Image (cartoon, rainbow, N blue to C red; front, side, top):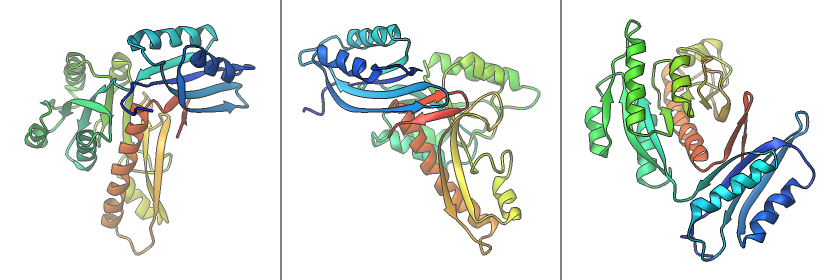
Length: 287
């Protein structure tokens, strides 16, 4: 198979029903498509079916958007929620960052190397520090100061920037501000956050100091979707590392930042590859 051929990837969820896998694969087969990868999961308690299918349309297909729309119509007719994406489509991503730059660089370098299949279209920060280095990446930079008194106005400015750049996904790369419920509702698209702790432990500020005071033996980082409730959104990925009584707070911070880079980039990559299904407070992540 020619790896350069366009592929379609669909994420499906809905009530579990007899023959659903056969119906999906049968539709693709009847139209001359070839399934590259398929995986499914059933939540036995909730009675919900989840599936991810990746396939190449039939040889000679020229209108891939029409093929995508046809599959979405078919899946919807089976009472399934569906999100379908072409391999050539690149999500338009905005990075929100404050002063810590380790996750920020990981994302921009990941896009540059094509490990993250997206287009980072802007960087928004409440501090001016990242302006010059962002210019070096060739990405527009917007300094939007945020104070308690100006938060609503600042978020309106941020929202206008996202609209102007047609952003599909916001990634909070150690953005040290809380996005308001009003902002999240207005944006109405995914926002991925990195929390420098293994949630739900040590939520909020200074988790490494909290962890050191508690004498933990494991520290971690959590990438999750942001919701109106602080640090409570559906978890995409978590990683941990072992520590001991010999580690200082500084040691924990250094170790934690390495974990943060990895887990945020992995969560963003999974999202971009249409591998993450959200339901309730949980996610299904297809490998």
